[in-house]
Length: 175
Image 1 (cartoon, helix red, strand yellow):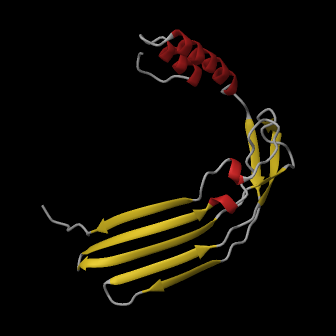
Image 2: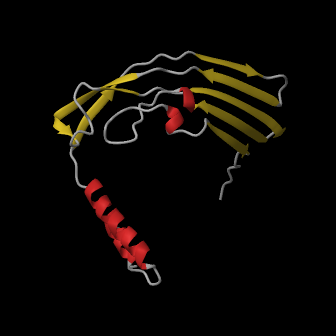
Image 3: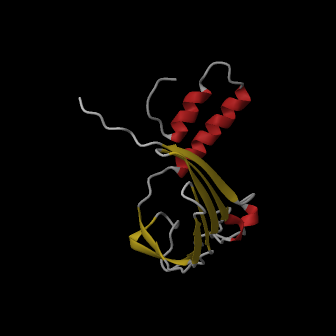
């Protein structure tokens, strides 16, 4: 397959022409390419979704000595209902509907971090973030009917992140 930039359908057609691909897989790739051609057609969009939400945030910082710093934070879930404005009739063939409302909640989040001063100029840090995605209403739909579904149908579990960082400032030297 020659190098270059491909539209999704063209890419699948090129892959289907590779040596050793079984005929039934070629048919699947060709059929999928045709479907993608229809989905990736040019659409004009000029739409905005606006809403307002309020979420309390509680945090605490603990520094038991000059080497250890601990931070804890909890952000409450923010319920938001967004109102859609379509400008100049450019709603991407019904993807955006004038004056419709969609849910766009922000999930609750818990964060914890710790920083330890290993040496005077070397610190090590660790962070943990937990997002309560399953309880937030994202306004997800599964098909073109636009019927919204609960998160249990589109999200398997809540999400978390872990980060580890060390930091040592660089010394400036003159030439």
